[in-house]
Length: 162
Image (cartoon, rainbow, N blue to C red; front, side, top):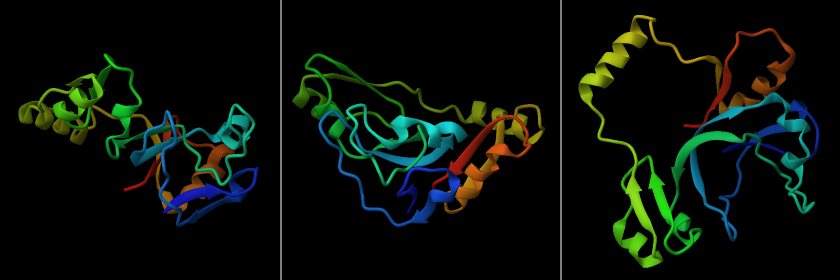
């Protein structure tokens, strides 16, 4: 499922619907999105609707900030021989890196259960808070865009995909 617009316009153009799985083109990687933050103005940006070369992008899926994981191994083929691939979600395949002539490393250290418990406690006590204005399920994404002109607390608006 996706939140898409088939014609240029504002939030009234957004529809929650099934969408075909994208196929990455040359120089692109496919990302499985877990959450996406929206910028209300992005529906007014030309690059939301057309490529730099002027090709129409519709139907578009708005959001230029997201979190997720590379789906598949296409990212290795995007790199130059001798390049460096740094992953955050899981250790990269050293065999695949060798096949493409790149150096691959895992950036994030193994989580420390004690530190995670301490962070969870700070969150539970209200002493640590991310600045999120609102979290909205993807199926209600149109409502999130429509809230642009309404008073709301500061912070990000997050579309929850999973």
